[in-house]
Amino acid sequence: MRPSLMSTNALEQQPCVLLIQPDAMLAQSMSLDLQAAGYRTVMAVEPSQGLDLMVKAPPVMVVVDRAAGGDASLRFCKTLRQQGSRLPLLLIMARDQVEDRIACLESGADDYLLKPYRSEEFLKLVCFYLKTEVTEHEQLRFADLVLDLGLRQVLRNGRSIDLTLKEFELLKFLMEHPREVLPREQILENVWGSEFMGESNVIEVYIRYLRLKIEEEGERRLIQTVRGVGYVLREA
Image (cartoon, rainbow, N blue to C red; front, side):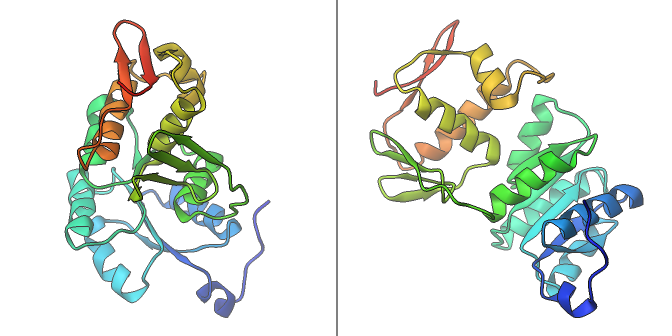
């Protein structure tokens, strides 16, 4: 149930989310969902407006539709990262092809949301990256790798590792089944859901990025490939 209109002062005290969205109806729907979750929105139609708006109203998260200027949206993401911004950055995309996921990750975006827009999925991402309503404090451990479910944080040898939501869920599933060979189909169903309609090699893409992050300091490989079957978390 969406909230009634709030006073201007109350809205100004809420954390701000910058939303770059050319579709007015979609922008309104997302803004109302964010308001229901306790955030106010500052909206732009094109990425070129984004940097100026961020100075006037510093956000806690940036959400940009790739349709807002095409490649300009990706350049906007890269510019933010080049300027040193570590704000959570989400892309909205119309396609779920491997090249789109790679473009998303290489642009510096933390994650993506697919159209058609679904409130529940969007707010799940917002909750994950802004770490709201966290009550769990359980940890999963394997070798020198620690996954904190409460803080939604991954540590290796004390080094903090930033993961996207899907990378986090993929690693969590592997750590819940240590030394167990997990077929690709089982990983897809448990991490992406039984209704996943994307390409089958989505797992390979995410395993590659996950390995790059958890082996960044030259640590030994923990996620092993079992050819023709799937993957297993074990020490070589």
